[in-house]
Length: 290
Image (cartoon, rainbow, N blue to C red; front, side, top):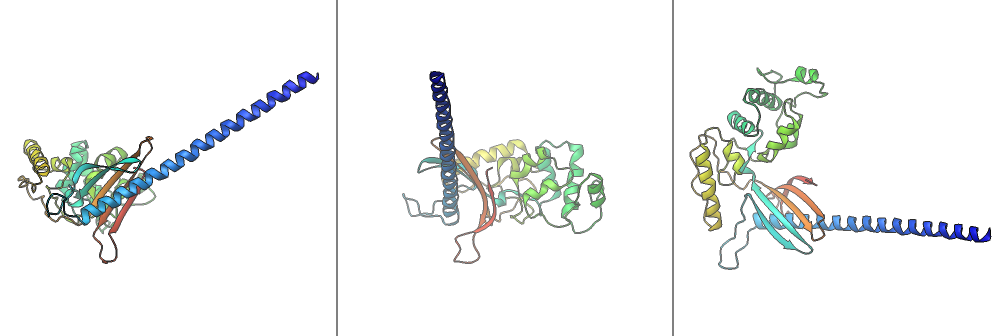
């Protein structure tokens, strides 16, 4: 009996020791992962500030005494820094469609390219305009307070300008699928009815109502070639009254960082030149974990 008791005690001690080792291993892994997540986030923020420095305060290139301009059309730049790789994408907001100022036809072209059925575009556009106009008068296919209540929404239209692109998700008729396809082509910071073709993403150029797809594709190729050669963008294509040249008002910067271990983190910010000289930049919007 004594031998049996000793064997049971030894077995119990072995199980307890194994459980302790497993618990410590799990806690160690969690702590390591937490540290790596913090490192990845710090890398992403470093990439963001590096992009702000290069975009808002360009420095002379090493080869010659000229300012080296970063592309602001969504092209991805890679930067090796510390224990990881950083991927930076900068878009001048003048190349995006302003949700508050854009022409109805321009917004409609974006919806069509995003796959919204043609017979549903007018209702979505009317709902957007009913959201941002100051009155309670419902457009033909739009939505005011009564329509939102009928749809089970606690709040009706804002009757004011959009303060962020994310606010678009509250508009009646904007599904999550539609929002995800158009959100990165929209802004609330350009404050102009048209877009700048020199910085506009390809999807925005293809959404222009009077644009010929072949002409747009040719222009995009020329723009890439000019950027590769360090030349100014080519003359814009003739696409009607939807062009604007007010550049440099603000920039959307998306940064993703990946450690050598595979842990990733990402941040997105909209920045502009500061109004006070003591500030390095003005932060207009901030997102994490994209």
